[in-house]
Length: 362
Ligand SMILES: *Cc1c(COP(=O)(O)O)cnc(C)c1O
Image 1 (cartoon, rainbow, N blue to C red):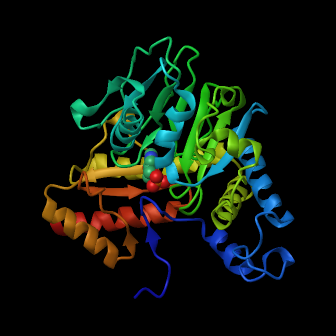
Image 2: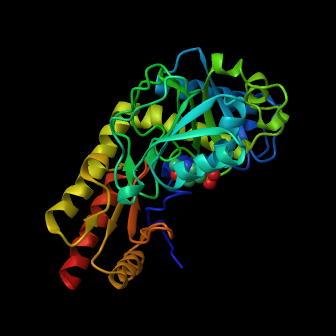
């Protein structure tokens, strides 16, 4: 049993800012002087209205999003978006381009195909076990949208620069890197992100959608699967996951008021990732799996010389209060997820541990 909080490198659900958890603890029994917990108040109350409106406003400010976008909160995780996107935006006779950069994009493709939609996989990095982000892609000029996964949580790769799709709207699964860096939102038709990696707890998915695209949502979809249902009811057609939205609001407030915005966040994230990659590049004992120009700032995937040693590494790390370093079960190896809330100090402590593990086993 651990008496104290430890360094958490979990891939998701993942570390949250300690100050956010403390604020939740502080106001848990009596939210905002209501005499009730956030988990007990109505989603139709002015308390919750203020929470969801503030979360939307902060999202728009942080990402510098224009008034022609809507910010929605949907349940079902990022995985539900894999089918909602084609259901809403891909009508009969239309096709969409997908880039396959591993696990999550592969699943997005599969879900669109289950619906019988026309999907063009215009590029894939499967040939090298998804260790890189494809470049120089030929997109179809008549595609309804181009789907990418901005950060590949399991394979440890990340788009450094988003592709030019010549006006075709980009749709991006940003589950594991939303709010980690500033970017130009204007080429995007829709962005979705399960909250539990970088902006909150499990149970809610943020969706940012360009308003004009909502006009083409078919009428004959079930209400809960239509973006228009969420946009016309401020994400409160039915009961939203109030606690999850509240936590997201607090994380966004932390990003704005404590960190000071996404430029600052990016430079902190870059510093963390650079320290870790530089250390591994200098030694040879730990081998990063992603190609250098595709490396993720969020999920640092690496291998040791054999699986036995990897297992020992993960176990001994945990004994040293460094948790969550096992690679995804589908790829093996090791992975340090260093999302926004992970402090630099956690990365330095990890590097110190890696040095001593290496000197004992190298
Ligand atoms: C974790 C993850 C998902 C799956 O998210 P759920 O909310 O569990 O459905 C999808 N895409 C990416 C990039 C992820 O990291």
